[in-house]
Image (cartoon, rainbow, N blue to C red; front, side, top):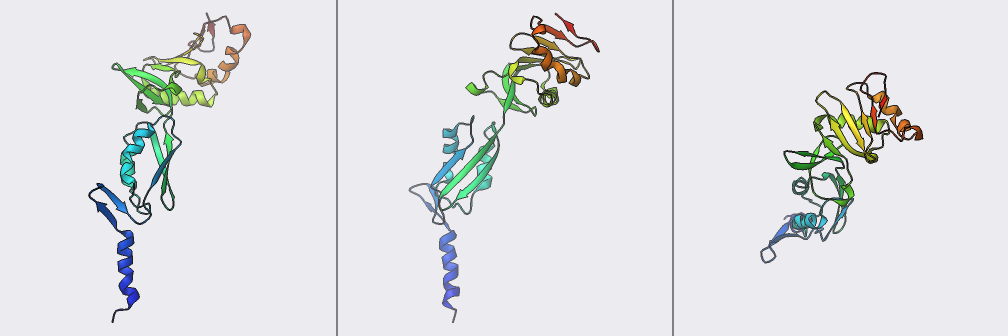
Length: 222
């Protein structure tokens, strides 16, 4: 005779771990920790209404057997999402923590506008108020990630920048929002970045609009 506990154990697991499909609702339903609530956190740019709609297929599926691959497929469709973290709150809640890409500038190529991250990654442009004052890049954006890192390291005030211009010779101009322009040399511009803040803030230099460092060891003011 088969022991009763061995007989009932497979039945128990079959019932608990099985996902049911109710045709009238046209959705999967699990009796094992079914997802009833989806909470999305840390989003500034992503359309949460649309994202929640795209994740609606998770409702009533098992929180224990989470469909991570399908969630990743959905998140990959959103340009601003860098990564997501999933937190299960038993018995019925799924929390999704979003890490977003952060634009630091905009650029236009072939009449199409993009956001650009400090890593040099492009994001399709959508009008967002929080990014309406970003500086614009003119020239080859492939060099921007290295240049931006140098600016950050030397505490250059990016918020004061109106535009960046890259020239084929391999150098940058920085145009500030107060219309002052900094002309950097092709090489060894880091030493200039280390001192430029103090010069820009010095009242003796406020009348000048052009700070030309292109000639080695010289600063030409105009």
